[in-house]
Image (cartoon, rainbow, N blue to C red; front, side):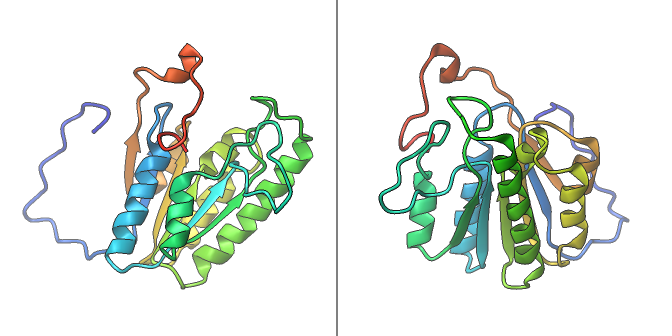
Length: 204
């Protein structure tokens, strides 16, 4: 565990819990949260499971003739790879909020996040998928684009056998409590703080 705590030995007299859909959270200031979620998507797809990846905050692919706006980055290459492999993906965001040159009105970011939230509800409740990844949904909460209760309601409403994956930076005790598996990514060093920007094939 990231905390360094030892796992308690299981009680041999405790009844075995049947398999269930897990709520999985990758959290923390370190790099690797989305990478872990994408690795899970590849594993699940390889096992024949149906997967949907919905990304919050990160900008969607520009239409033909459009250019990326300040604060936006290209679609990550793992998404391009997954789309070619037949995995369903979508992006519900307008890029970074208030940093790296973002000039959009905050209301635009809020509207996009709320649209994403409604789409997430539809995907989770559809019964079509065995794994749903809501990448950066906790980041949307950190930016006050959505509410903590929105995420808790999604967790509470998911079908019993659906595996739900959420990612973000900050720990919210109620959300952590509602999860079955939580892994914290701790930043030790990051090239951004040396002025090195994200690199194709490594970061996106």
